[in-house]
Image 1 (cartoon, rainbow, N blue to C red):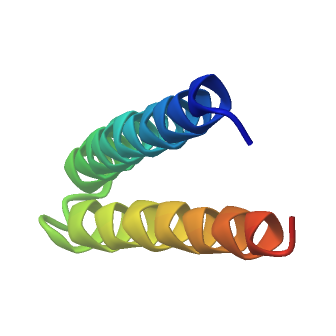
Image 2: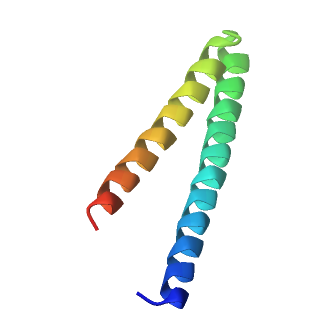
Amino acid sequence: MNINQKAFNQFSHTLMMSAWGFAMVICSFLFLYVGYRLDRLFNTEPTLMLGLFMLGLLLCIGRLYQDAWMRRDR
């Protein structure tokens, strides 16, 4: 493997991790907002907001782990 290929692989790994970080932030804030709106609708503050926030985080972390596990075999 030449130097250009190694640099490209490192860049692609960095880009993938930054995309996962962006997806995790967007997903958690989206779930947080939906939970906030549902809590206001049902008057159950902060139960659904925190629950959906944690669910969003766990789903993103699980998907990241699954993606890393699949890439490990390559």
